Length: 320
Image (spheres, rainbow, N blue to C red):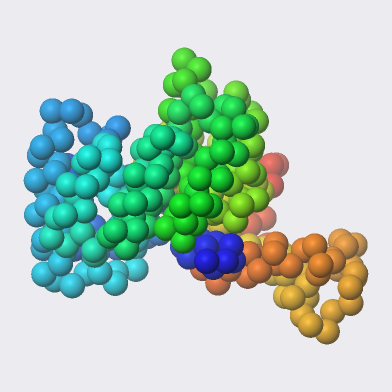
């Protein structure tokens, strides 16, 4: 599958809302209900679930999948993924009635060693995986490169997107997020950019890490702005109030949309300028195609509306 197709498939992930498998709202997700406008939802049996609740979570998942299969909710707008604790649990879930109705699985703590087994499961069940890179090995650029090679050899078409696990990476350093600071103002700035760049250079879509300070919407806005500038296609959300903010920031400006259309116009010159910005189809076409993809999925923001919610640091969205 071409990188453009991979990106187009993944751009609809948007704000990916995580919830424990025991959350009462999980039933609504599997019933096909829209959950606060989330682009995708992850039903988690790993970090979000206490060990004592795993059996209850699995039983609930089994029941929800069966009901979903019987009701034919496979083609709901919101993509639904399941996050097992390990590969053994993934095999158990993949044999449940109705598993084929979900979009795929989140792979926790993907490594070079565990990767092939996950890809084998994905191929056997014709499903998609979202590997999460969140262990200490990923501070090593060479290791990241080897994992990217492994993805390519196992089959990029089985990967919906690559997820970056910010909290687990901070935990490797004995740290946690500092209120008021984006991920790009702290110790993960380099590693997130490095990991994202290596994966995107191989054609893989990459999703940004969670922002886990729920009420700090100003910092969330600044962080998603930086996520988008780095080419990330979406972001993990842990609270419904974050969904609208993330989706607002995924919109494109009318100026970028105008430039993108001009760059992709067969009648355009090899080099031209729009409002003092150089446009060169030979080097800007991939950017332009991705701008059009984002605009089609998330829309275009209007400058007059944005000026009303801007407070000195670029584009902001209204908190919901």
